[in-house]
Amino acid sequence: MPKNDNINNIIDHKLFTEDDIHAMCVKLGRQLTTDYAGKKPLVVGALKGAIFFLTDLVREMDVKEEIDFLDVSSYGDSLESTGKVKLISDLVTDVQGRDVLIVEDIVDTGLTLKYMKDLLKKRGARSVKCCVLLNKESRRRVDVEIEYYGSTVHNEFVVGYGLDFMGYYRNLRYIGVLKAEFIKLANNK
Ligand code: 5GP
Ligand code: MG
Ligand code: MG
Image 1 (tube, helix red, strand yellow):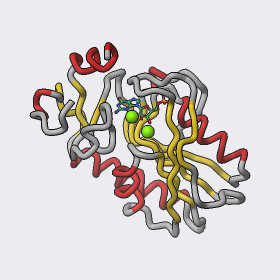
Image 2 (tube, protein in one colour; image 1 turned 30 degrees about the vertical axis):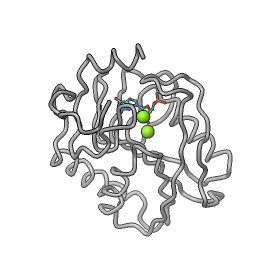
Image 3 (cartoon, helix red, strand yellow; image 1 turned 120 degrees about the vertical axis):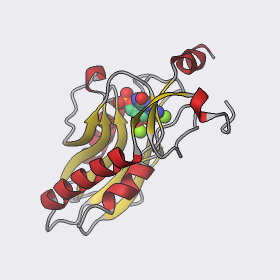
Image 4 (tube, protein in one colour; image 1 turned 90 degrees about the horizontal axis):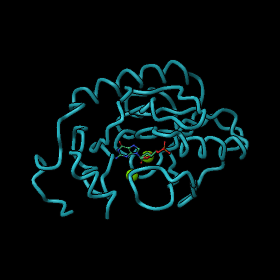
């Protein structure tokens, strides 16, 4: 899938424009500013998808925060979570006693987020909450609390603003729905 393919051949339709995304970041940032007032949270970005959201979100938060990153992935590169989650790259920061806010691009089955939350709680974080841009509520397979999210989405595969398809299209400024033919292509490969 060459990266420079005409994007109109890949995206079925736009779901969230740059302005929509900005509005979600502003709203969430305001709420987090209130809720973390007086605290020094550790904002943990889930690589790689959350980096665009994290950089926009923290700049809407008037909070004294630190940033670190964690890379946790399902085995394999299919479009569906396999259920087995592994730690690819760990934090540098000690989370003991910290108020941790995990920032994630999208929650689907919830397996990845649950793994991260459980891991950081086990390491002695004082609180572990999450802020997710997109919430695919209908797909949830495990019980995991989503304290903050930008919007719910239907069961469609979305790309852009950090969200990839086989590693590509993260740098789109908007979020769009991938054409169905590409999903079939990826699942049959
Ligand atoms: P979960 O463990 O909740 O099933 O999966 C979460 C991860 O699957 C997300 O962090 C994301 O990497 C990937 N994912 C789930 N749905 C989508 C989607 O619609 N588009 C993209 N690009 N990735 C998705
Ligand atoms: Mg992710
Ligand atoms: Mg991915």
